[in-house]
Length: 345
Length: 203
Image (cartoon, rainbow over all chains, first blue to last red; front, side):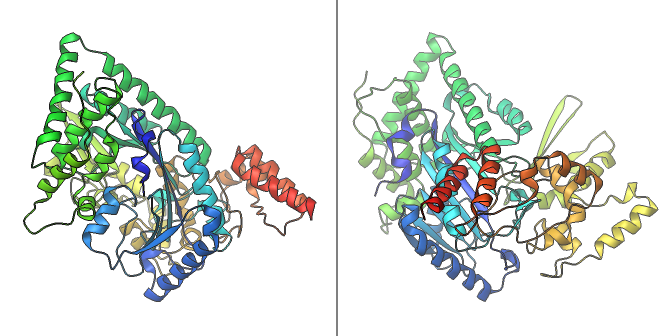
């Protein structure tokens, strides 16, 4: 089953995709931290029944993952592929995840909040993600009464989500903007509008692979549409600046850049042992090269899919760990399998 | 994702930048560590008055700053610290320590301190987004202060009353909800209500 991040639309521009997360709590229960195990069990049953009843209406088929039973690898894979927001994640008894096969819709039950509905979508289409998330939210609402007040909106354990309970973000690859050292400037500017710009993948560096998440911080005092509209404007500004940063620089710099891109391809194609963050650096060059026509268009490598696929835990699912194979060796093998032959221009 | 410089576990939500003597220092903290570090110790020396930062942070986190308290405020705070949520037993201190509420009723129990707290966090303390299609308000929180009443009066009328609609609503209720949704530019919801009106007319 093709994952949402394997969709071709993830490769069309700096914007990889969008995610909308709606946080809800069910009335009649305390918030997650204060819940007894049997309360968690009851809440979970209610949610599962609601999803079952409305599955047809959502247009998606869900399968269940028991987070408390799952091994570390599976949980890390879910976080690594951005299927579950890390801040919402929990592995306490009763925590479960309902997820579609393409991982575009996930419903986290008994995480840090009762319910977290996340919709991921490829490309520059956050409005569609919001519409889908709202639809699922309304369908579940038929069976579940949400904790809500007209004054403060949807009530959540953490006041960071009170109000709309909506966390909307765009995943953007800002290869040239980071090269131009302009990220800090936009981080500062956007924080004044209530948006954060931080690295998407976890690692020692601030933003491995130069992939950033542009996310709203404000959930109270703004409507969902206002937030989405601002998000779209800021993302579009970042795309324009990314393009501008690419065009800056003289011929010598451009030649250096082309060399770096082909070197990156060479290492990915032939190396036998690759570290996670190191690979993301090369993939960043590859993606930038593809996007700006430096590499031939006919041989489109699914770079975004690779960025998600090289995570240790995701590889474990793909190629089981043999006794003697290191993670880094396995990663290199995966890349050799997936990377197409690119003829030099 | 920026991690807290103290605990290296939680996501940092506060960034303190200090520029003194031409040297810039940055400190990223999560909510819990920021609450612990109300002053700035030897690792982050500042030539400015540390009590300014302490009270600024205290204000943002809702912790009372002992240095600036008046007698009247002392009593007020004592009253606040004695408040306990009847539904889940959460106390004011517990809330400040964890930064999270125990149950939806906590919003009603602690609403006297929420306006300021939420305003600092989000720039506003009044919800103006989506409301649930079914179920309506589960926790009623009174608008008690004069400011709130003025805000209420000045705001769009449709927003102050949470009218929820479902299949059993009358046509008038549906039309009112439709007008409200259009005014709020919630066209997805408006389309849904329009379909409900059509279904009602057909039956």
